[in-house]
Amino acid sequence: MNSRIRQGALALVAAAVLALPAVAQEIKISHQFKANTDGRDKATRVFVEEVNKKDPSLKFRIYPGSSLNIKPVAQFDALQSGTLEMAVFPMSYAVGKVPEMSITIMPGTITSIDHAMRLKGSAFHKKLQEVAERNGVHIVTWWWTPGGFASKTREIGGPDTVKGEKMRAADPTFESMLKAAGASVLNIPSTEIYPSLQSGVLTSTLTSAETFVSMRIYEQTKFATVGGDYTLWWLMQPLVMSKAAWDKLTPAQKKIFQEAADKSDEFFAAGQREAVKHMVDAYTKAGAKVRALTKPEFDAWIALAKTTSWPEFTAKSADAKQLLDLITATK
Image (tube, rainbow, N blue to C red):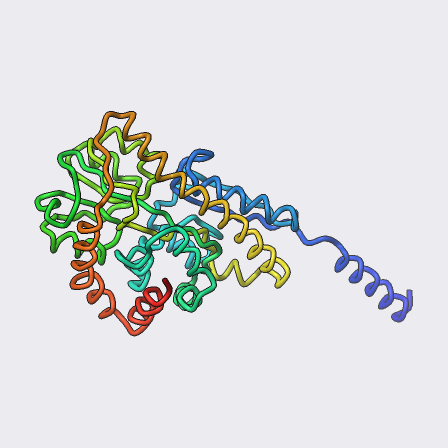
């Protein structure tokens, strides 16, 4: 075979290889929540289904209930290193490495599901994405969870009702407000709330309505403060992706991800409106006393936050100050 024929044959082989479909890429999704019952898992499955409608070559494997053997907080390290592609991640868990993420749980900044959704695509969203990507993570979805208080020992209302309580709120900046009100605090992931209440390490907690139900925290507490028009505890718990994995997607795949995220956001927001009702029902059936914060109680918490959590947060960095300014500018 002369060189010209050989070169032609090699060119045909190369063209054939290029024409082959790409090898299917598996994307692992880790989270700490219960499969098929918790809204965060359900919304993840909506996202995956929507992506696969348009790109079946992207293969996902979901690992619920920490079944990938990565602890909830450690998921952030795995995302940063690129050893984990995706996770449903409560953003306040990242504050040890990215203090600015306290903005995703800052008391007095989110007022309702509708308000949270109005922030999608806003200057605040763009700035938060910028900070996340600078730290190796891309925020894919826009999931915000409302929550409340629950206690083993007492009804919780305004700041004067938590003195002496051993509480968890999921973020050190948020917890500085609780400390100022006289509570002692423990910063742990939500997977540790139930045993901590059971053992007496905690006497009360703040967490999402979803978690109160899916992790059966109503079995360990007798008083719940949730619902109504005034919710103090909100946390962003989105589907996030390693920036390294995000950058490997084609422009077309990124567009598919964004469209799938939009669908899952709609599904999740609708579910969170129901999650609060489910929490109230679960506590009522368990024989607990359930109430909502009153406006004077809520206002007292926000006044306290503005002299504790807010200034503590803005002192962290110029980005922190900008994030707080941006989130409070969108009503």
